[in-house]
Image (cartoon, rainbow, N blue to C red; front, side):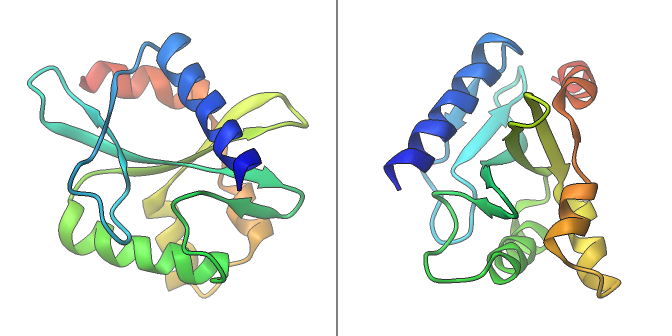
Length: 141
């Protein structure tokens, strides 16, 4: 778990330094409510982030419930995001092969479940470079 935490801290530092995003830890985060929030200039919640670690064909996060498979964790986050959060939710991870920060917007994950096409391969196929998403987020802040 220590290794995962270190990678997540490294990604968070990259988000803060390279992209100049100012994140807050959600004090109301319990269960499957993401702990990391991005605020707009009026201090309203713009979006939620879950920082993950990609290890081979697995996606891990300190926010995922232990001893539960990825699909169940994502379904639980999906339920909360749909019913309570009403804001975009991003999975973000470092792709070591390409040495690039990648992201998956959670609405795309939900589409996989609705289409009954969820697999880790399909999930990773949804990932796009964070460099493409960051300017769009910046415009909205």
